[in-house]
Image 1 (cartoon, helix red, strand yellow):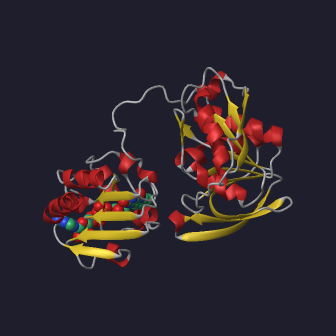
Image 2 (spheres, rainbow, N blue to C red):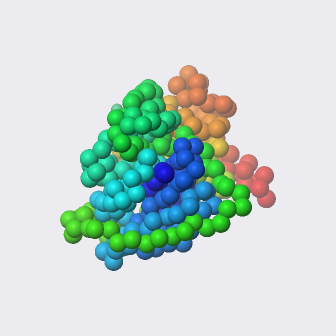
Length: 319
Ligand SMILES: Cc1cc2nc3c(=O)[nH]c(=O)nc-3n(C[C@H](O)[C@H](O)[C@H](O)COP(=O)(O)OP(=O)(O)OC[C@H]3O[C@@H](n4cnc5c(N)ncnc54)[C@H](O)[C@@H]3O)c2cc1C
């Protein structure tokens, strides 16, 4: 049996976690899930559509929103109780954080950001991203139970046609008050309700070349295409955009159908976050910018004139 930690945000299923469910189904036909929080119940049943037979939901009145240590404790408790061959989660910041806590609690190693997993009897083999995906490491993990996260977008979500809802079984995790020391207590600003960057099919991303006041047309284009705005670290470091929009090694890793890189040079650390885009368009004044070697299409020009023209053209095409 494989146990998968599946994340949610106030009851809304984290679609990225379904990638870990798909990876689990490649290892075993018996895939069960663990979720945390009373508001996870509806999403918990939905996992049946992706091949999960049973979802165990940790319910405690003190868990009202994401709490990493308490979640890790609940996952560890379920792992000890079920003795699965592996415990998986998707390698999102939250997935990695929860499994890091869980592995410390059960005192077993944790292999993060795996692109391939082969289970063995006491020794499993993993291939995992190192150095922002620039190096792939083949490793053996000596542990009776493999604890691993799947690299973002390494496993395709795989719905099971005709399957019913998963059985939902609630349990009470054994938590100390200290497990709730870190938890979300409030949310202010941001979160405009748009498409999440990590899951967006279109990302319109801006770099230094866009300039501090130049993001309006990028927002307009993203809205017209049903996508999200991203940016480079130069932009977040300058305080032009929030860190939540940063794409790259130390930001969000995206895999959209279309990535539009505007005024971005294409540094290794930025490419680490967008190299899985199916199609990339670069808009840049410099025809020799590094980003050109990753782009499928390029517009050599000033973002200040190209972007408004692009917005007008897309709006006209849609009307
Ligand atoms: C440990 C570490 C982690 C990092 N993590 C990240 C990360 O997660 N994400 C990230 O993005 N970076 C990251 N960086 C920073 C990274 O190395 C680069 O510095 C950064 O990506 C560059 O941002 P940029 O492309 O916006 O700026 P620049 O490199 O300055 O490029 C600006 C580009 O805009 C073009 N341009 C200028 N004017 C115009 C115009 N008017 N119209 C169109 N184009 C124009 C220029 O030709 C140039 O190509 C990290 C660095 C380190 C050391």
